[in-house]
Each structure stands twice: as C-alpha cells, then as structure tokens.
Amino acid sequence: MSVRMPYDGGMSTREVIARELERLPEQDLDRLLSFLLSLKEAHAENAVPTLAAESALAKDWLTPEEDAAWASL
Image 1 (cartoon, one colour):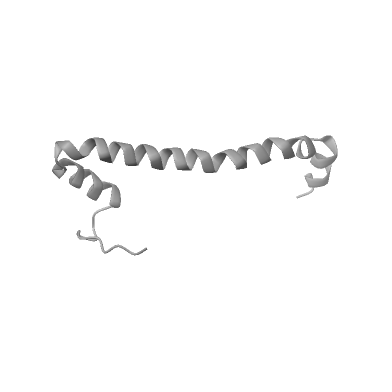
Image 2 (cartoon, helix red, strand yellow):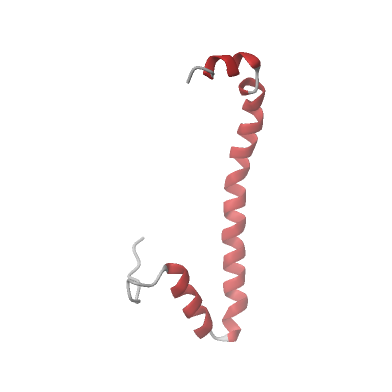
C-alpha cells in the first residue's frame, strides 16, 4: 500500500511522526498507543519462530566438526 506523505522530503519519517504526535488530540492518544503496542506485539510474535529454529539448529551448528568445516573460510 502506497501512502502519499504530506511533508517536506527533507524530514525523516520519525521527525514527521513526532511533529504529528504533537498535533494529535489528547483523546486519540489511547488509540495510537494501542496501535503501537499491537505493532510491537506482532513483531515479537514473528520473531518467536526464528528464535525457536535457531535454538533447535544450534545443536548441529555448535559442534567441533562444524567449526572445523568452516575454519578455512
């Protein structure tokens, strides 16, 4: 989804968000916080399978044989 950003191209996205946050009505801050927390949770949930796979494969990766195979690289 492409969204046209109504700001000067010289500003970073973080700067624009900070500016818009200052303009946001107080009653919308709870909704914004809920949205931000849902984004954070979604990223955390996406990271779990990666961490599980990494620990499962570590038993094969962290061996003297594996170290020897990669030593010349």
